[in-house]
Each structure stands twice: as structure tokens, then as C-alpha cells.
Image (cartoon, rainbow, N blue to C red; front, top):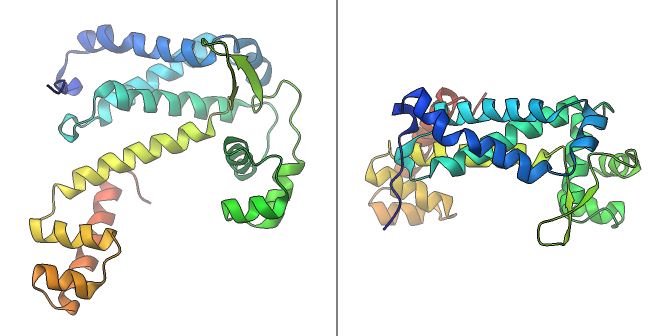
Length: 240
């Protein structure tokens, strides 16, 4: 039996905090245990700062959570907490580098590309060669937040990108997915079939045969759905 999805927005504030406050402390302790001195040295942030920021993420998660989409709140909240703390650490780094360089280097490290040549990285990530060279040349200090090693609970070594750029992107991916699921619920059944087949790279002729419409009609339906999707995204704050 599936676990019931709670409507956390309908819960009294005191009950909500009593039930989910520990989620923030658990996340901060689990992810940054043993690295707080390095975090402080590179950003000036204390444990209390990370917890406070995590609480902001928890409150945002509660405000934005839609229990009708089938997600457990703790899953969504964990992404929001991680994203808020990750942005705080990234923006508080004492050694300021261009954001694009920071993100690119994080991707390179995350995919194990730091030992590859620039041309290989360029093709792998689809970014201009000059940007790859700049990211390779950037050398953070020895105890940088970018390459801290720590011993995990299982005794193994794990590389942690403390600036947590990946976290910021993961949060956006989850939010976008939830908004898409919500948008799909606004579509009529024929529209949903058209959009689903389009997403699966079916031709407009194939789609038309499936729904009994000509190619021109399918094209108009897709344009109408795209326009509504853009408007829906703007309403949800996920589009400019």
C-alpha cells in the first residue's frame, strides 16, 4: 500500500515544524559532518548559518509543495533544502570566480573529466574550448570547497563538491518535473496524446493518424499547448 501524501500546507505551523524541523538538521549533519571547519575557512559560514538557510528551504518547500502530484513531502523538501544551502555556500565563497566557470568546473569534476584533455571535455559537455581551458587553469586553494575528501560512514572515500552546484540544478529539475505534471492535468485527453507523441519524437503525420486530425491541425494544437505551457510556467515562476 502506498504511503498517504500529506497536505503539509493545511497543517498548523506548530505541527509542521514539530514534524519536519529535524529534516533540516539531519540533512546538514549528514552532508557536512567533519567539513564544517573547511566550510567556515572558505565562506565564513557557521553550522547555525547552514541550518538557518536549510529552514528557509524547508519553508519554501512547504509553500510550493503540491500533494496531488504523488511526491512525498520529505523528498521534495530534501531537494529544496539542499538547493538553498548549496546556493548559500556557492555565493559565500571568499574566492570569487565567474559563476559560469564555477558551474563548468563543477560539471567536469562531477563527471570525472578533470584528467581528460580540453578537446575531449569540450565534446563531452558541448561547451566552447576557451571556457574549458579557463576552467582547467583555475586552481583553487588546497582546502577548497571544490575538492574536499572525507570518510563516509561506510569507511569509503567520497569526493564532495561543497559548493553544491549540482544541487541547485537538481532542485530545478524536480521543480520543473512537478510543474509539468501539474500542467499535464490541465490538458484534454486528445491534447495529452498529441503532446505525449510529440515528446516521443513522432512526426505530425503520425500524430494526426493517431488522433484523427490532419497535419495542419496537429501543428496548431502543438502551438496552442506550447503557448499555454509557457504561460503556465510563468505563473509558477519557472520561466522568464
